[in-house]
Image (cartoon, rainbow, N blue to C red; front, side, top):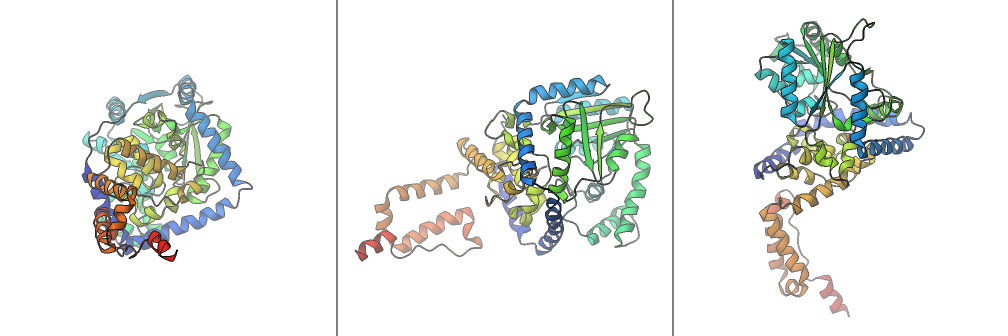
Length: 464
Ligand code: SF4
C-alpha cells in the first residue's frame, strides 16, 4: 500500500488545467477531428466480427483466469523464457527497474538507445534516467518521436501525438530539426524515417514494451504499425523489453483472440500491421536478432490492485485506448491534464493504485459515470463501477477535502431533519445551497440551483 501524504495541490492543478483545456476551442477541434476518425474506423472494424460480444466475453474470461492465478502464470512464463536463454528481471518498482537497466547499459557501454513506444517506460521515466546518465534515448515510433522532440509526455496511450495537427508537427520539425518548412505529411514522415535509420544501426541497446506475455511459450508479443519496434529489437545487440506483470495471456493460440480485439478496439484495424513474437535472444542457427534479451517484469503498484479482489479486474486492461476515445471527459480536458502516465477512464482507475490514492484520488471523480468506457472495453472491464469503488476507498481512507466533508455534513443534517429544512424560507435555503455548491465549483458556469418557494410536501398538504 502506498503511504504518500495527501497533496491537495495536484487535484487543484487538475481542476485548473481541466477548466482551461475544456474551453480551449482549438484543442477541442483537433481532438474531435482526430478521435472522430478513430471512432469511425472502429465502427467499421467491429463490423468484421460475427459475434463481437462473444469475443469480448471470451477475452474477459481468459484475463480473469490469468489475473486470478497470476503467480503461477508468471513462473510458467519465466521458466519457458529462460529455457531459451532469455533473462528475467523482476522489478518491484521504478527504481529497481532503472537500477537493473542501468547495469545493462554500463556493461554494454551504451551511448545510444533506440526505443519503441512503451507506456511502461513512460511509467518508470526511463528517458529522463538515461539522459541523466549521458545516454541518448531515441523514440522511434513517429508519434513518440514527435512528442519527444516537443518535450511532452504522450497524450494518449495508443496515439501519443493525437493532440497535434499536421501544421503543429511541421512547426515542431522546423524548430527542433532545422528543416525547411513543409506541411507535406509524406515529407515530414520521410524526414523522421531518414533520421531514425542511422540511430537503429548505431544503438547498442533496443528497448520495447510488450503487449502480451505468453505463458505457455515464454514469449512476448509486440504490436505496432510502423515496424520500428522490430528494428529496435533486431539491430542492437541487446534487447530489453519492459512489461507490466498483468500483460499475461495463457497460450500462444489466445493471440488469435487478443490481437484482433486490441487493434479493432483501438484503431479499427482488423489486425495491426506488425505483430511480432519474441521468444528470446538469437539462437545458434538464427541469422538475426539480439545477442541477449532481457524482460523486465514490472510490478510498480500492480500488486496493490491484485490484492483487492473487487478491483483487480482493472488489471485485465490490454491498453487498446478505446475507453479514452469515447470518454466525454477525456475529449474535453485532453490527455495531458491527467498528469499521469495512463490517462482517460482506465488511467483514472489504476493511477491511484499505482501512484498513491491520496495524490491521485481526484482522477476517479473526473467522470460523468456515463458508462461509455465500460461499453466499449474489449475485455469487459466495468470501468465506471471501479471509479465508484475508488471514490469509496478514498473517502474511507479519509482523503476527501475538508470543505467537501463540511458540505456533506450540513446537507445530511438538513436532509435527516426535514422539519428544520421546512422552517427556513426558500431565500435562506437558496443561500445555503449557493454556499455549498459554490465550494464545489458547481455554480461557476451553471445557473444557480433555485429551491421552489414551497416544497412538494407543503403543496400536497395544501391540496388536501
Ligand atoms: S480499459 Fe478496456 S477499453 Fe480501456 S484501454 Fe483497457 S482494454 Fe481498452
